[in-house]
Image 1 (cartoon, helix red, strand yellow):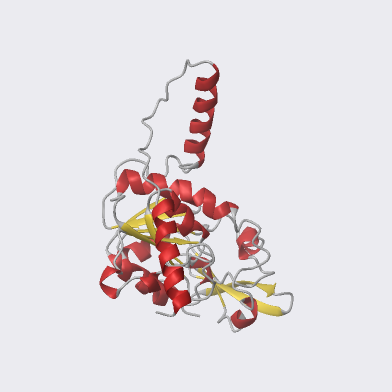
Image 2: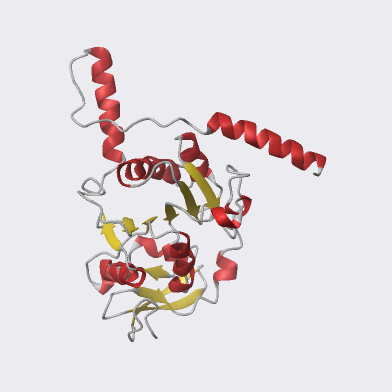
Length: 286
């Protein structure tokens, strides 16, 4: 089977039972390490619900990623630009980013936009469908043909912040028991290594940054410093803010060691007014 990232001949390394019924072979590329399933003929069944009931972090994950994304955008990109959450599911992440003062829109071919109605890519005129940065969280592992979707993503922006877990650097036996395979829901079909991510960066002529685990930035810009703050950007920032806030309120003794990021005016109130007008328009049928 040909590697879907670099085109080399991939080798069958193990089999797993998906959806508790399909015996599926997995193939790993000896050149870039990319791991893929056999052609996934079961996907229609796997996606009979756009959002898997097994995803218990459906709320926690976008809220955590919102803090991480906010920090990266303010530190490294034009925070006054327009942004897109590609494969944005229910729109919860987009809504949170707008509440944090960042002009985000949502895109998803399959899931219903619940939380960011009227802030979908379909609501933008074509000339405005260029973005300072595109986020793409928990999408890459779902792609049966990665280049098809990645071409669409990078056509929207040469700056992409995404999440997907890199393969563990262990034995094939360890890899075959990796919990990220998620065989029960059958939706994960593509699994990346650092080398395969670097090949993606080379194809689009961008720089690649990673925390070595699950967070990745592709950018046409050369970014200074450790983009992910030792892999814990967001989590560290939240903990610091909480700790300093508590101590300062009690004792008034400790000053933050790092300069706080500027607060941005929220879009919440202007969005409310805009959505009210649009809902009234739609009810009238104009």
